[in-house]
Image (cartoon, rainbow, N blue to C red; front, side):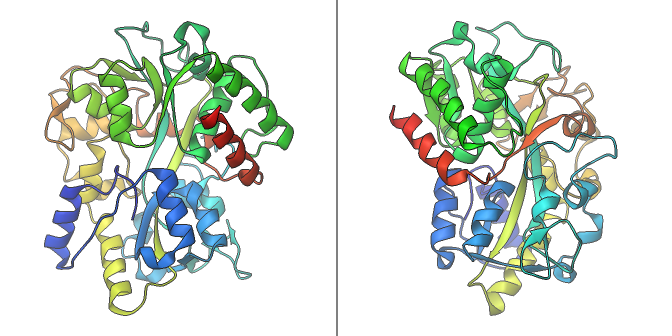
Length: 382
């Protein structure tokens, strides 16, 4: 069970062919899969989503620890997950950097001290921001003029959408409110009740004035919003940007001067998974880091935790564009087999290291998550 961005038919068929196991994919929107998994561990064997789901699943007893010695490529996994930084001088970002919730501690909590058991297998990850259509919005300068504040700028009124995932959309909105000078946060990764109240007062006022054109729940829906010209800019995930471009839309994936909202993919084992199904689950997890899936997922703009293994399965133009941030020396295909990058294009935000050196906040379940959830639904219903 997981989201549409990783539960793709081509991956399912390839894994079944190579592993000789039967796989059933159940994709849903981010909020829906988390709610289902936390409430019913029997509804899945493996769970794929983002690191902000870990605390909820762990506290609900829905997932079981993974044994590091059963993960074939653990030693190849780079430092981003294990230390929270891809490079020593990178900005670690506010909120739940993945190393904070990775290792299972002796008291059963999750923390940064390395142990032999972990809460999730690290695999895909990326930094997110917003996409905008340059037919309607003048292209900005990456890391200089592009700003989260554009999401709440009055000149974009009626043409803005946010992702309808409470642990994600709240940070896009908070970064926008802070960039617009409407409020500040002491710690944007762990907002106080008072800060949440102030933020949602701003958002509800904006919504009631017609500022938001919608709140999308899945990547295909975000693509439809852009294709239908319902929005000119919105929260976006990389596969949505790629899909829009393959349809001929001039969508730029912003590199906000305030920094990105980062996420890390998590693959988790249900608390109910045992026996031969558990063995097959480990086989599938190991397959994800075996090279081919990482190369496949790079074509929708996602990184893998052990990229060197996928490098040999990518063309030099692909590797140079997706990981090195260099100009595309030929047209590049997306995961759908259509051209998503035209020759001469540069990847928005630059290289893997550049992008992950500019993190403002990680997708996070805050201490006041339950309260923020209530406010989120209040916003949707306003």
